[in-house]
Length: 398
Image (cartoon, rainbow, N blue to C red; front, side, top):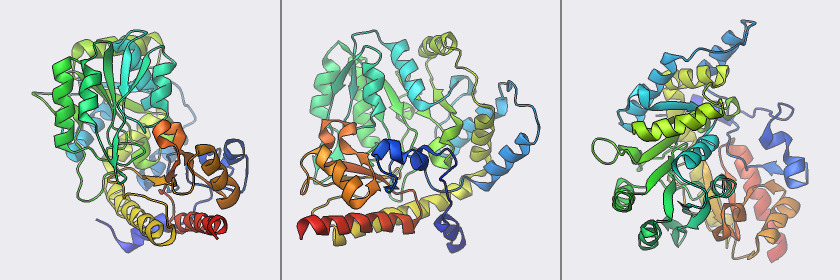
């Protein structure tokens, strides 16, 4: 899948300071220090596929950036990509454009539930899941994942209890899971599907990391379960994580059920969110049409980074625990042998190690003593960050 010359491209340092980068230019306001090496927010330090950059540059040469057409080739590119990469046959009519996955989740929550309804999540989980529920006057219902020596599984007994409660209307699923890196197996998702069918609970499935899966694992689209398709579901996808184009604010929902699609489209139209970014549409379409070889090489590089990370932690960071992620470019570091409180760990990482990671506590109370690291960076940068942590730990442990 990969070759050394392509890997060398991913090894190339690309300066991002001064480009308006949230990851690099906001470290002072986020961490209170300009000295940290940032491996936090989930974007990559790699150039997007050359075809994407070329198409954007060519379009930018035309001096008019007015309203864009509802491009049929955009929807067709999505249909073809989902069939090719995920073996799921969808119809163009099922696709609803949106400016991002988080706004799409919020729109779906508003459309498919009422204020006061319970929404089930599985922490530790992506922080906006909490906010999207709370900020819209719904009730957060936790079905915490079970950790078995750092390997996370779904607590199905607890999940069934939560689903059986008629006040709980939706399950917000993270598939693959951020931050623990699980690529839920078909068997696990089938159990979830069966329980949700039994208790008539709809599933909102965030599958933004679905293309980023490593050898030995396979992404299963939740909505592909059932016959002919799971109508009690909304799937959220985007090219943003896969091809590093998150700043173009373009995503889409796949909604097989006409009734549910109509309810969600009503909210989309009410807020006038139907029209996506001109360059985001072009970038997504081009990435799906011409970026597959680039992605295959990226996955080789990312998995090697994951291996380097795990080996470094196991050999040079005694007491820190990590399990190699099955997907995503995120790893979940367990510092509880050294820090029981999130505030102390966060302060240590910034002030002593001088690295900027995501605080585990932002992923729920289950993240106390953890930190999330984004390893989608040049290998030399990753090793430098880990070395900084190693030196800082030696200082406090003697």
